[in-house]
Image (tube, rainbow, N blue to C red; front, side, top):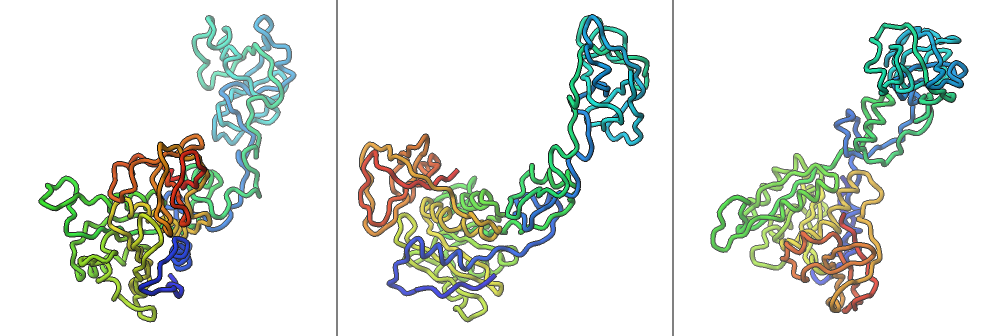
Length: 440
């Protein structure tokens, strides 16, 4: 992991959203590739193109239970004048020694079984008497099929065109085709394809390990009784869930009290399992902002630990932010504000792209679109701040959800988008077109 690039720091410097994001993304580097077994590679990003070594399917096979026959032998077959064929054998899935099908002959074949030599098409068993001398299977005269190994004769009541109900060799993919492109996130369908072409392992970038912790002596874990002046810790749960949603392996650490030494020790203990660390709370100008106290002195730019820079951003919510690297391996650390909405918005704008960059993805941002503002009144925004308001998006329209307060968790739970109000805009009228960040 490289150390951070030189930053235009200073107590009076007001960072833009884009400057802070650029600083994060120029510091974070994709994780080194590793070879993993298929199931261990789920959710990881493929490093190299994967080529197909063997066609799928590898041989012509039947898509139905029925009889493999020659087209001319069933031409003109009907209920009144069925084609009567000699059954020369059974062909099951996985069969290797295949008896050829000659004139006037048929082979009973199962779904997935290879098409025997001489056969040109497959007649579904429902078009036959099942080898029992009755009517079509499913009709009034035939109640069951002839047992396996009982060859005899079969009556066919319908004609079949060439290659009917036959899965052709290579009809899925052919040997030499590209199965998957580098940069593909491996989900169940991709893992199925890799297994189908005989790949047991694959070279990927591993899912990033993200450690999440909240700070604050007022925080209590859910299911515990609240004391006076206490609140439940929701940030660590929200951020851990968001990290997993972004593709990371996320570890939630219990809330850390307002003690700089305890926080510093906790961070050091967690470095062993972290590719990225995220904290919430303690980054503003309050007297008990222990994250700043604990991490500002971890190391300077030339020291072994890297160091964390705390800064003000021209945005709302989420003005106070921290970013840098910690520990001998320069693990990136993003310190987010403690207010729940500020924390979550900051995650979406800065932490999620960092996680996606660690994964080796090129498109690391949430999708954005333009939408019509569906509101009862104009939206106001402070001059010089890029504001991100919670919204609900549907059918090209977005409506605000809740107020602008950074503590309104209930409103956040109803939102699936962020309405972006630029720095130079102080009011947005209903019906105006706005930029929207889609969160789902």
